[in-house]
Amino acid sequence: MEKRFSIISYAQDNINTHATDNLVELLPHVKERQTTWITISAFTFADKEAIEQLLAYFAVTSISADQILSANLTEFIGEYHDCLYTEYSVPFQDETTQETIYATGSVILGKGFLLLFVARRIGLFNHIRQKLLAGNKQIQQYGPDYLLYQLIRAMITKIEDVLFRSLVEHFEELEDEVIASSGEAEIMDEILAMREQVKPFYDSVRRLAFFVETIQEEDSLFIGERTSQYFATRLERDVAAMWQGYFRLRTWGAELLDIHRANVGEKTNHVIHILTIVSTIFLPITFLSSLYGMNFVNMPELKNPYAYPITLLVMVLIVVGMIVYMKKKKWV
Image (cartoon, rainbow, N blue to C red; front, side, top):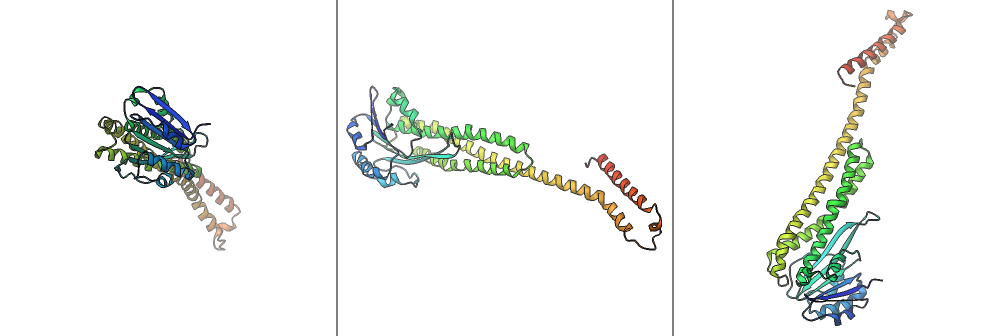
């Protein structure tokens, strides 16, 4: 079974790792003059004391264990004197249930260390760990600030994967259904459900965009000049692409609603069209039948034995004539 807590200490020429279910056991594995990456997975309030010891070990006083354990996300307000702290929430779809789930947690970046708190074991950052343990020199030659950059990129990549692949595929399928439909109520429910799947991404994209923007504008104590260039170039483009993908899906959803409403309107107009034709056809014969049915004694045709069939024949001729006329006018 995978251990809940792990540490990776690395430098340019070596790397060490250790995993345990006792958070305090990680501290002896912290190496001087090496970058330390500690991951705390599936943490609960039962880990509060251990988290406090961990924060005290790295001299982090600006952040409390209660803040880390809280389920309520806080806004990024910039750096503290002893660390850079940010919280994240990345929504994506469960491959089995297709429901939206969230990868949430927080990151503490300090001088020579990075603490990653993962609320649920979803594997959002597993590939970064695998790259590092496989001896990725690009990561090893940088400090923990570059590791933070990699974590942010992993969040962005996951969001882009959902926005540009999963949801786009669903929208394309839904679009085909909407175009082929005639305004069924079930289609409306599907459109609204898709719009609800898109909404959670706004807050995640906004948080990442604000974080990247703030890092670029401020002189960071914990992000070096070399790494800050990655924030200013690659992440800025990625954030712009995320916004574009998000608003594209929002616009797409609005367009599908317009198409559906047009289908409903067309269906309603068709029904009204048929009713109008029926009413138009039967209006003159209704007039004749009502006139004939008044049964006035002074109407000589009432006593004529051929009056009734003649009246019916006139009605039939009127109906046929109106249908022929409407077909020539292409009304039907």
